[in-house]
Image (tube, rainbow, N blue to C red; front, side, top):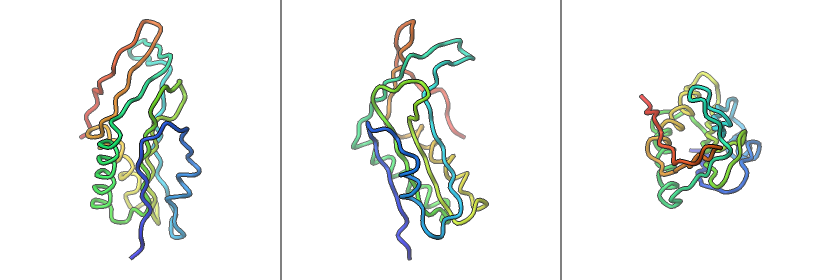
Length: 149
């Protein structure tokens, strides 16, 4: 049986999509589903401007929960080859990637898109990462209002 690549971590470093993709790609890989979360500079529906976000995490627990998410992906989608779940923390400016979820597989029609979507949804549910939104009208810790189905 092949050892499938797995990356999960919290980092203060800039996220490098090309490097992560290379690390989770096998010679049998024909598809990669990638989710990139970004810092939004404006939230139109709330008419709010964001100067920057500050992300914090309890790293040992966050990484343990990321590993759990990867395990759940493998249990649901056995065809997934590589998995990367990387969350950036620190002060991040608008248009900056904050998180990358990558799932690779031999073919695009094997559930690889669903696996990546599950990865970000599940991360939002159980991984202890917090963000403070700083704007021209002050700052506030943001609680997520999205709960995956």
